[in-house]
Length: 396
Image (tube, rainbow, N blue to C red; front, side, top):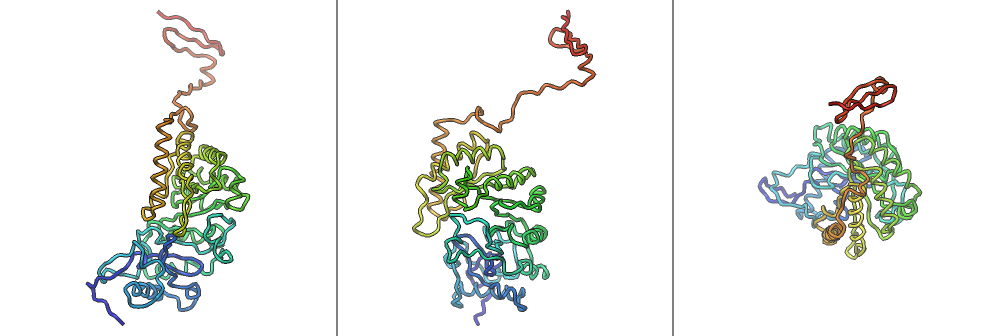
């Protein structure tokens, strides 16, 4: 077996060393579609009596060795990933869980079970539709590190699925992660209300992202294959009313939802609900041949303009964070250019702003005693009120 020397330069990755992806198939190191590590510990191995901290460390080491040419293990996307870096072997450590700053290096999707069949979901395209339930307890994985004092708080834990709230262990898992693991962001479709989610949002202990993708009930049903539009908006309202700043509502622009009815419906819903954050996202680019719809950027720009005009909300473009994909980069540029054109042609004023604070002073309500009898001064008059009758006496 090859033995590295401390100062040998090797290829490694923070996610391989300390990342965590827990899916029904087992444990990997990261999950940033379409890029991801291979599964390094299978669900059967996690459920076996031999499962241990040492097993996970050894599996990470095997992937590391494959990246450095020492075995022929499947490395999935790792060999071509931009996160792969060169470092000294003495700085490589496989013992810890968490603390990694690479995006999507801590992803929890123990169950793929879902009550929607979204048109853009990649699971829908797999053979048989792999909406698998959880096959092991994710807390068992965490405990292998915690009992050895090897957990570092993660700056960002993605908890998704499937629909995470359908998992029978959802609230138990969430409570554990909030208490021991770091900052959790739940990616939910908002069809199910969770009292624990509401509690943690009120305490600003978690983040919550939900994708609506429609401004009408009919379009929502067409995209998500469920008649749940009003239920989704109702649950979002409950979460926003906690006063949290950690709710993110997303609209993925698709060929099916680029209508005036959906545009106005979504903007007016956001004006009424007033979520802290709104995302306008493009379609997911999956595969080299996929092209974002050519009219998408115009619709996104118009939605941005209308959200600012009517709802006093400045949305965010997730494609701004995707500098590695040319389509996403161009999409952000095109949306911003079209938005700038709309602003130049029709500058936004407060005339149509539904959420602009009124600057008018509210008249102070008089007490019952003062309504029956009072003396006050207004301009050059002394005003006497007796039993509701107002008499103005001119003063010198």
